[in-house]
Length: 365
Image (cartoon, rainbow, N blue to C red; front, side, top):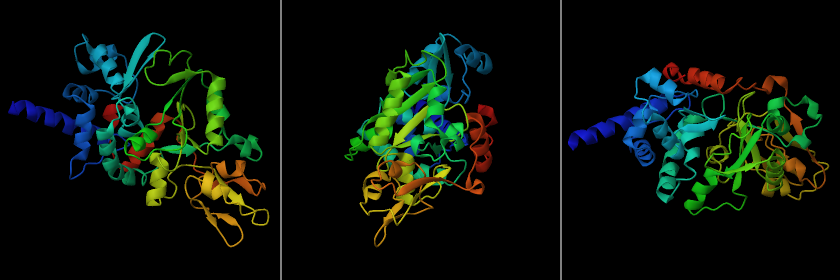
Protein backbone atom coordinates (compact mmCIF):
# COMPACT_ATOMS: atom_id res chain seq x y z
CA UNK A 1 0.00 0.00 0.00
CA UNK A 2 2.81 2.38 0.85
CA UNK A 3 4.58 1.74 -2.47
CA UNK A 4 1.39 2.42 -4.42
CA UNK A 5 0.91 5.73 -2.62
CA UNK A 6 4.47 6.72 -3.50
CA UNK A 7 3.91 5.82 -7.16
CA UNK A 8 0.77 7.94 -7.28
CA UNK A 9 2.59 10.84 -5.64
CA UNK A 10 5.37 10.55 -8.21
CA UNK A 11 2.99 10.60 -11.19
CA UNK A 12 1.37 13.85 -10.00
CA UNK A 13 4.78 15.42 -9.42
CA UNK A 14 5.75 14.36 -12.93
CA UNK A 15 2.52 15.78 -14.36
CA UNK A 16 3.12 19.10 -12.58
CA UNK A 17 6.65 19.19 -14.02
CA UNK A 18 5.33 18.55 -17.53
CA UNK A 19 2.75 21.32 -17.19
CA UNK A 20 5.42 23.71 -15.92
CA UNK A 21 7.64 22.81 -18.88
CA UNK A 22 4.91 23.88 -21.28
CA UNK A 23 5.11 27.54 -22.37
CA UNK A 24 2.16 28.57 -20.17
CA UNK A 25 3.83 27.31 -16.99
CA UNK A 26 2.49 25.69 -13.83
CA UNK A 27 4.51 27.04 -10.89
CA UNK A 28 4.97 25.05 -7.72
CA UNK A 29 3.95 26.25 -4.27
CA UNK A 30 5.01 25.61 -0.69
CA UNK A 31 1.45 24.58 0.15
CA UNK A 32 1.29 22.03 -2.66
CA UNK A 33 -2.06 23.39 -3.87
CA UNK A 34 -1.07 22.66 -7.47
CA UNK A 35 -0.66 18.95 -6.67
CA UNK A 36 -4.02 18.94 -4.87
CA UNK A 37 -5.60 20.42 -7.98
CA UNK A 38 -4.12 17.72 -10.17
CA UNK A 39 -5.30 14.99 -7.79
CA UNK A 40 -8.80 16.47 -7.88
CA UNK A 41 -8.89 16.43 -11.70
CA UNK A 42 -6.72 13.45 -12.74
CA UNK A 43 -6.69 9.81 -11.74
CA UNK A 44 -3.14 8.39 -11.56
CA UNK A 45 -3.54 6.53 -14.87
CA UNK A 46 -4.79 9.73 -16.51
CA UNK A 47 -1.83 11.73 -15.22
CA UNK A 48 0.56 9.10 -16.53
CA UNK A 49 -0.98 9.11 -20.03
CA UNK A 50 -1.14 12.90 -20.18
CA UNK A 51 2.65 13.03 -19.85
CA UNK A 52 2.96 11.00 -23.07
CA UNK A 53 0.86 13.38 -25.19
CA UNK A 54 1.85 16.36 -27.29
CA UNK A 55 0.55 19.83 -28.07
CA UNK A 56 -0.35 18.69 -31.60
CA UNK A 57 -3.32 16.48 -32.38
CA UNK A 58 -2.72 12.75 -32.79
CA UNK A 59 -4.89 9.67 -33.20
CA UNK A 60 -4.75 6.85 -30.66
CA UNK A 61 -2.84 4.79 -33.24
CA UNK A 62 -0.20 7.52 -33.65
CA UNK A 63 0.17 7.82 -29.86
CA UNK A 64 0.54 4.05 -29.51
CA UNK A 65 3.13 3.88 -32.30
CA UNK A 66 5.14 6.78 -30.85
CA UNK A 67 5.06 5.76 -27.18
CA UNK A 68 4.88 1.96 -27.34
CA UNK A 69 1.65 1.97 -25.33
CA UNK A 70 -0.79 -0.86 -26.14
CA UNK A 71 -3.44 0.27 -28.61
CA UNK A 72 -6.12 -1.86 -26.96
CA UNK A 73 -8.28 0.45 -24.83
CA UNK A 74 -6.15 3.53 -25.55
CA UNK A 75 -8.75 5.43 -27.58
CA UNK A 76 -11.41 4.75 -24.97
CA UNK A 77 -9.10 6.03 -22.24
CA UNK A 78 -8.30 9.19 -24.22
CA UNK A 79 -12.00 9.80 -24.87
CA UNK A 80 -12.68 9.49 -21.15
CA UNK A 81 -9.90 11.97 -20.43
CA UNK A 82 -11.58 14.32 -22.90
CA UNK A 83 -14.88 13.96 -21.04
CA UNK A 84 -13.08 14.71 -17.79
CA UNK A 85 -11.68 17.93 -19.29
CA UNK A 86 -8.07 16.79 -18.96
CA UNK A 87 -7.15 16.96 -22.65
CA UNK A 88 -8.53 18.30 -25.93
CA UNK A 89 -10.43 15.43 -27.56
CA UNK A 90 -12.56 15.92 -30.66
CA UNK A 91 -13.87 13.98 -33.63
CA UNK A 92 -13.20 15.40 -37.10
CA UNK A 93 -14.77 13.69 -40.11
CA UNK A 94 -15.15 10.46 -38.16
CA UNK A 95 -11.59 10.42 -36.81
CA UNK A 96 -10.96 10.98 -33.10
CA UNK A 97 -7.91 13.08 -32.31
CA UNK A 98 -6.32 14.12 -29.03
CA UNK A 99 -3.73 16.50 -27.61
CA UNK A 100 -2.49 17.76 -24.26
CA UNK A 101 -3.36 21.28 -23.18
CA UNK A 102 -1.73 23.64 -20.65
CA UNK A 103 -3.33 24.54 -17.34
CA UNK A 104 -4.72 27.76 -18.84
CA UNK A 105 -5.94 28.24 -21.50
CA UNK A 106 -6.78 24.55 -21.31
CA UNK A 107 -7.41 22.23 -18.38
CA UNK A 108 -8.92 24.93 -16.17
CA UNK A 109 -11.43 26.03 -18.82
CA UNK A 110 -12.28 22.41 -19.64
CA UNK A 111 -13.47 21.85 -16.04
CA UNK A 112 -16.78 23.58 -16.76
CA UNK A 113 -18.84 20.42 -16.29
CA UNK A 114 -16.86 19.34 -13.22
CA UNK A 115 -16.43 22.61 -11.33
CA UNK A 116 -17.77 22.31 -7.78
CA UNK A 117 -17.24 24.38 -4.65
CA UNK A 118 -14.12 22.47 -3.63
CA UNK A 119 -12.48 22.85 -7.04
CA UNK A 120 -13.50 26.52 -7.22
CA UNK A 121 -11.83 27.21 -3.86
CA UNK A 122 -8.67 25.40 -4.97
CA UNK A 123 -8.52 27.26 -8.30
CA UNK A 124 -9.05 30.58 -6.56
CA UNK A 125 -6.23 29.81 -4.11
CA UNK A 126 -3.87 28.88 -6.94
CA UNK A 127 -4.80 31.71 -9.31
CA UNK A 128 -2.47 34.43 -7.93
CA UNK A 129 0.44 31.98 -7.89
CA UNK A 130 -0.23 31.12 -11.52
CA UNK A 131 -1.39 34.44 -12.92
CA UNK A 132 1.11 36.97 -11.56
CA UNK A 133 4.16 35.36 -13.21
CA UNK A 134 2.06 34.38 -16.24
CA UNK A 135 1.23 37.97 -17.14
CA UNK A 136 4.85 39.08 -16.84
CA UNK A 137 5.78 36.99 -19.88
CA UNK A 138 4.96 37.86 -23.48
CA UNK A 139 3.31 37.30 -25.85
CA UNK A 140 0.05 37.82 -24.02
CA UNK A 141 -2.51 35.03 -23.98
CA UNK A 142 -5.35 37.18 -25.27
CA UNK A 143 -5.90 39.98 -27.74
CA UNK A 144 -8.85 42.35 -27.71
CA UNK A 145 -11.23 42.31 -30.67
CA UNK A 146 -12.79 45.78 -30.57
CA UNK A 147 -16.41 46.42 -31.41
CA UNK A 148 -16.04 46.52 -35.17
CA UNK A 149 -18.54 49.26 -35.91
CA UNK A 150 -16.58 51.59 -33.62
CA UNK A 151 -13.33 51.28 -35.61
CA UNK A 152 -12.97 54.44 -37.65
CA UNK A 153 -12.19 53.43 -41.21
CA UNK A 154 -12.69 49.74 -40.47
CA UNK A 155 -10.71 48.83 -43.59
CA UNK A 156 -7.60 49.67 -41.53
CA UNK A 157 -8.31 46.81 -39.13
CA UNK A 158 -6.36 43.64 -39.81
CA UNK A 159 -8.32 40.37 -40.10
CA UNK A 160 -7.38 39.15 -36.61
CA UNK A 161 -8.65 42.47 -35.20
CA UNK A 162 -12.13 41.97 -36.65
CA UNK A 163 -14.83 39.80 -35.14
CA UNK A 164 -16.44 39.34 -38.55
CA UNK A 165 -13.25 37.93 -40.10
CA UNK A 166 -12.91 35.36 -37.31
CA UNK A 167 -16.57 34.36 -37.52
CA UNK A 168 -16.57 34.17 -41.32
CA UNK A 169 -13.65 31.73 -41.39
CA UNK A 170 -15.62 29.36 -39.18
CA UNK A 171 -18.05 26.69 -40.35
CA UNK A 172 -19.08 25.28 -36.96
CA UNK A 173 -20.04 27.25 -33.88
CA UNK A 174 -20.64 26.43 -30.23
CA UNK A 175 -21.57 28.46 -27.17
CA UNK A 176 -21.14 27.42 -23.56
CA UNK A 177 -21.11 28.89 -20.09
CA UNK A 178 -18.13 30.88 -18.84
CA UNK A 179 -15.95 28.86 -16.45
CA UNK A 180 -14.82 32.03 -14.67
CA UNK A 181 -18.42 33.07 -13.95
CA UNK A 182 -19.27 29.58 -12.77
CA UNK A 183 -16.31 29.55 -10.38
CA UNK A 184 -17.17 32.95 -8.95
CA UNK A 185 -20.81 31.95 -8.56
CA UNK A 186 -19.78 28.89 -6.55
CA UNK A 187 -17.69 31.20 -4.37
CA UNK A 188 -20.76 33.35 -3.63
CA UNK A 189 -19.79 36.11 -6.06
CA UNK A 190 -22.44 35.72 -8.77
CA UNK A 191 -22.15 37.89 -11.87
CA UNK A 192 -25.06 39.95 -13.14
CA UNK A 193 -23.95 39.68 -16.77
CA UNK A 194 -24.89 36.81 -19.11
CA UNK A 195 -23.38 33.39 -18.36
CA UNK A 196 -23.56 31.59 -21.71
CA UNK A 197 -21.00 33.71 -23.54
CA UNK A 198 -18.00 31.58 -24.59
CA UNK A 199 -17.90 30.86 -28.32
CA UNK A 200 -16.10 27.97 -29.97
CA UNK A 201 -15.29 28.19 -33.69
CA UNK A 202 -14.10 25.48 -36.08
CA UNK A 203 -13.21 25.64 -39.81
CA UNK A 204 -14.93 22.29 -40.53
CA UNK A 205 -18.67 21.67 -40.63
CA UNK A 206 -20.20 19.44 -37.98
CA UNK A 207 -17.22 19.45 -35.61
CA UNK A 208 -19.37 20.25 -32.58
CA UNK A 209 -22.27 17.93 -33.46
CA UNK A 210 -21.05 15.29 -30.99
CA UNK A 211 -19.28 17.64 -28.61
CA UNK A 212 -20.54 17.06 -25.09
CA UNK A 213 -20.20 20.60 -23.77
CA UNK A 214 -22.26 23.61 -24.85
CA UNK A 215 -24.80 23.94 -27.66
CA UNK A 216 -24.27 24.34 -31.38
CA UNK A 217 -25.10 27.57 -33.19
CA UNK A 218 -25.48 28.81 -36.73
CA UNK A 219 -23.19 31.61 -37.91
CA UNK A 220 -26.07 34.07 -37.54
CA UNK A 221 -26.68 32.91 -33.98
CA UNK A 222 -22.99 33.36 -33.19
CA UNK A 223 -23.21 36.94 -34.40
CA UNK A 224 -26.30 37.42 -32.22
CA UNK A 225 -24.42 36.18 -29.15
CA UNK A 226 -21.65 38.69 -29.83
CA UNK A 227 -24.12 41.53 -30.33
CA UNK A 228 -25.85 40.71 -27.05
CA UNK A 229 -22.49 40.58 -25.26
CA UNK A 230 -21.61 44.01 -26.62
CA UNK A 231 -24.95 45.37 -25.43
CA UNK A 232 -24.39 43.88 -21.96
CA UNK A 233 -20.89 45.35 -21.67
CA UNK A 234 -18.67 42.32 -22.23
CA UNK A 235 -15.22 42.52 -23.84
CA UNK A 236 -14.44 40.32 -26.85
CA UNK A 237 -11.17 38.45 -26.29
CA UNK A 238 -9.54 35.77 -28.43
CA UNK A 239 -6.20 33.97 -28.71
CA UNK A 240 -3.36 36.41 -29.37
CA UNK A 241 -2.46 34.97 -32.78
CA UNK A 242 -2.92 36.06 -36.38
CA UNK A 243 -4.74 32.96 -37.59
CA UNK A 244 -6.34 29.73 -36.43
CA UNK A 245 -8.64 31.28 -33.84
CA UNK A 246 -11.00 28.74 -32.31
CA UNK A 247 -12.63 30.71 -29.52
CA UNK A 248 -13.98 34.13 -28.62
CA UNK A 249 -14.48 34.83 -24.93
CA UNK A 250 -16.83 37.61 -23.85
CA UNK A 251 -15.49 38.86 -20.57
CA UNK A 252 -16.32 40.99 -17.55
CA UNK A 253 -13.88 42.62 -15.18
CA UNK A 254 -15.34 40.97 -12.09
CA UNK A 255 -14.98 37.30 -13.12
CA UNK A 256 -12.65 36.88 -16.10
CA UNK A 257 -9.25 35.60 -14.99
CA UNK A 258 -7.48 37.86 -17.49
CA UNK A 259 -9.38 41.08 -16.77
CA UNK A 260 -9.48 40.38 -13.02
CA UNK A 261 -5.71 40.05 -13.03
CA UNK A 262 -5.39 43.41 -14.78
CA UNK A 263 -7.69 45.02 -12.22
CA UNK A 264 -6.49 43.35 -9.02
CA UNK A 265 -2.75 43.52 -9.62
CA UNK A 266 -2.67 46.64 -11.82
CA UNK A 267 -1.05 44.70 -14.66
CA UNK A 268 -0.36 46.90 -17.66
CA UNK A 269 -0.50 45.37 -21.14
CA UNK A 270 -2.14 42.22 -19.79
CA UNK A 271 -3.81 41.81 -23.19
CA UNK A 272 -2.64 42.73 -26.67
CA UNK A 273 -4.54 45.56 -28.31
CA UNK A 274 -4.12 47.87 -31.29
CA UNK A 275 -6.55 50.56 -30.12
CA UNK A 276 -7.36 52.92 -27.28
CA UNK A 277 -10.30 55.17 -26.48
CA UNK A 278 -10.16 58.96 -26.33
CA UNK A 279 -12.78 61.27 -24.82
CA UNK A 280 -13.33 64.76 -26.20
CA UNK A 281 -13.68 66.88 -23.03
CA UNK A 282 -15.67 69.54 -24.87
CA UNK A 283 -18.26 67.03 -26.05
CA UNK A 284 -18.45 65.01 -22.83
CA UNK A 285 -21.63 65.62 -20.82
CA UNK A 286 -20.27 63.89 -17.68
CA UNK A 287 -22.99 61.25 -17.58
CA UNK A 288 -20.46 58.67 -16.34
CA UNK A 289 -21.94 55.72 -18.29
CA UNK A 290 -18.54 54.90 -19.76
CA UNK A 291 -16.88 54.60 -16.36
CA UNK A 292 -19.67 53.09 -14.27
CA UNK A 293 -21.31 50.70 -16.73
CA UNK A 294 -19.04 49.98 -19.68
CA UNK A 295 -15.32 49.95 -18.88
CA UNK A 296 -14.24 46.57 -17.50
CA UNK A 297 -10.65 47.56 -16.59
CA UNK A 298 -11.13 50.81 -14.64
CA UNK A 299 -9.52 52.84 -17.40
CA UNK A 300 -11.83 55.86 -17.19
CA UNK A 301 -11.64 58.43 -14.42
CA UNK A 302 -13.76 61.40 -13.49
CA UNK A 303 -12.25 64.86 -13.81
CA UNK A 304 -13.73 68.15 -12.62
CA UNK A 305 -16.23 68.60 -15.46
CA UNK A 306 -15.59 65.59 -17.65
CA UNK A 307 -14.33 62.03 -17.84
CA UNK A 308 -10.95 60.99 -19.15
CA UNK A 309 -9.37 57.76 -20.40
CA UNK A 310 -6.30 56.50 -18.55
CA UNK A 311 -4.30 55.70 -21.66
CA UNK A 312 -1.99 53.06 -20.19
CA UNK A 313 -4.95 51.11 -18.76
CA UNK A 314 -7.26 51.24 -21.77
CA UNK A 315 -7.52 47.97 -23.73
CA UNK A 316 -9.31 49.46 -26.74
CA UNK A 317 -12.44 47.31 -26.63
CA UNK A 318 -14.80 50.08 -27.76
CA UNK A 319 -17.50 49.36 -25.17
CA UNK A 320 -17.42 52.94 -23.94
CA UNK A 321 -17.77 54.31 -27.47
CA UNK A 322 -20.93 52.47 -28.40
CA UNK A 323 -23.09 53.87 -25.58
CA UNK A 324 -21.80 57.44 -25.28
CA UNK A 325 -24.92 59.64 -25.58
CA UNK A 326 -22.96 62.65 -26.84
CA UNK A 327 -20.61 60.78 -29.22
CA UNK A 328 -17.71 62.19 -27.24
CA UNK A 329 -15.58 59.02 -27.37
CA UNK A 330 -13.57 57.66 -30.28
CA UNK A 331 -11.57 54.48 -30.74
CA UNK A 332 -8.10 55.42 -31.96
CA UNK A 333 -5.60 53.11 -33.63
CA UNK A 334 -2.24 53.16 -31.87
CA UNK A 335 0.89 54.44 -33.55
CA UNK A 336 2.61 51.64 -35.52
CA UNK A 337 5.52 51.70 -33.06
CA UNK A 338 3.13 50.75 -30.24
CA UNK A 339 1.42 47.89 -32.05
CA UNK A 340 2.75 44.39 -31.36
CA UNK A 341 2.00 41.90 -34.14
CA UNK A 342 0.68 38.64 -32.67
CA UNK A 343 2.43 35.32 -33.29
CA UNK A 344 1.46 33.64 -36.56
CA UNK A 345 -0.50 30.78 -35.03
CA UNK A 346 -0.90 28.68 -31.89
CA UNK A 347 2.43 26.85 -32.21
CA UNK A 348 4.30 30.08 -32.97
CA UNK A 349 2.74 31.49 -29.78
CA UNK A 350 4.01 28.47 -27.84
CA UNK A 351 7.50 28.82 -29.35
CA UNK A 352 7.75 32.54 -28.55
CA UNK A 353 6.41 32.01 -25.06
CA UNK A 354 8.74 29.08 -24.43
CA UNK A 355 11.75 31.17 -25.44
CA UNK A 356 10.69 33.96 -23.09
CA UNK A 357 10.44 31.47 -20.23
CA UNK A 358 13.68 29.75 -21.18
CA UNK A 359 11.92 26.36 -21.26
CA UNK A 360 12.67 23.58 -23.71
CA UNK A 361 9.32 21.97 -24.46
CA UNK A 362 10.44 20.31 -27.72
CA UNK A 363 9.50 16.87 -26.35
CA UNK A 364 5.85 17.94 -26.42
CA UNK A 365 5.70 19.57 -29.88
